[in-house]
Length: 215
Image (cartoon, rainbow, N blue to C red; front, side):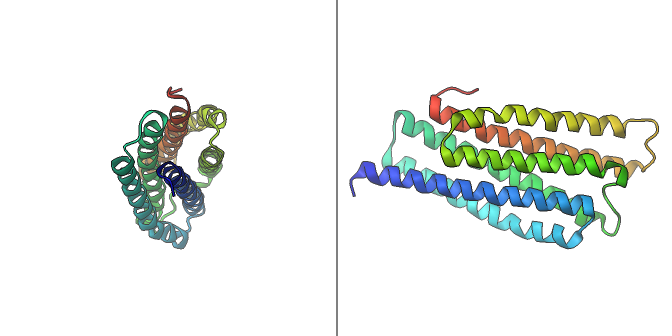
């Protein structure tokens, strides 16, 4: 196979592997959210078990990208694509960590419930938005669609709004669920907010790879 065709085929495999990783992370953030809201310790432990798979996958992707950089010595858009891919993988690795941290809260607090009934709706909604944003990023990567990727910024705005709502409710003088519950919820909400930020980072790197400009 000519070198150029071999390189293009390698880029296609890299994109497919990255899309599969995004799908895995979307599943993990969904399960972590359900474990948190439903106080499902068994589900939380299953989420923790997937942490090793996420890290192994990101390590493999980083090694593959580094190998392509060394062997192919790409320039112009090809170089931009590989550099952007490295940064995407790093962001995806952090997203996996954030989902794992949510599950860890459930396990650490057993047998106590982390999310009071009064906060379940807003916490579940944050998790749903994170999962939807992650899936959207996956579709953008799969279709190599910079317009879809650029649209992810707007989806992040709603997660930010809910994060502020959680903090406002925790700071309300009428909050009566206790200090520890308030701290746990503040930390969990921060993890959801950071997850969405990292998803937007992945989307922006896709735009950069396509256009050479960061949105």
